Image (cartoon, rainbow, N blue to C red; front, side, top):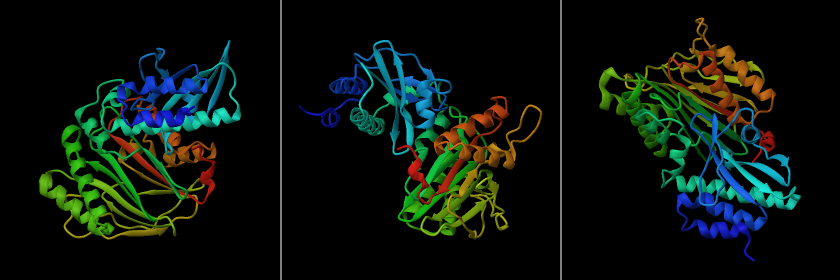
Length: 393
């Protein structure tokens, strides 16, 4: 008899995205799973939303905080629960270490270790199918929105790489708010050989004009990066693209960074942006002082690079001023130290990197009484030495 994994893989070649939930449920029954429901996280990563399908039981949306499903998502671990005549597994849906949501699987009794391993492999394939089908369907994008995205936000989400990426030597994870109305903030990254490139950008203004500027800047960044230019030349190309399209009336602050994951050498260009932070253990590292370059679109000369070296386990924080300048109703800024303290506490609690950033964005929102005064985004890079094997995969 064909095993469910092979059967699902064969079915996937001609699978319509609308039929994914029903097909997954049918194939899971081959393993003795009575019911299977897939949930995807919304854009804010606050709620888990059930994916409907023929023969799939109806479910309510579930909050990520305070539920077993949310615990599986937050901790990136399988959560077991029991009920009369039923044993339920909540299994994270992951693409690499990027969290998509969770799968709910109901069995007649507790699974054996072999069956649980088979279920985990099956759910891993399901996650990959969600990512693949998302490229040519709106089914999952529609499900994930609990409210309407602004046009600017729609453009920004389409520009973004996966929020989280990891290898044995580096983990990168990002976040941005307001998820449904983000305008000028964005980020990008790429790993090529031993080099990691990072960009965090904050376009002047708000809404659609800022999103268009960010789109031009990120397009120019990717073009220069793929032409294998060095950081100063990359900044020059982005500057020329922004200046050529928008003139002196619009610009963007940014940090372009490049890390050699073999040596820990970090180089960056600060184009009028908040300085990068390096967290070593629970302490902020004092970086060498380099005067910032002018913002992208306003540069008149090629910018020079800053240079330092990371130590194993260091965390590099690139962020926009919407994080540190988030102001409470009493007028208190969130600030660099509160940012560093939050990351330190999350690391001490051994939170997975994506949960650390998700929690930070929730904390920034609470600091402002859920009323963001500016876009806020952050990318955290951790240079690893092998301890990443503790990350649930």
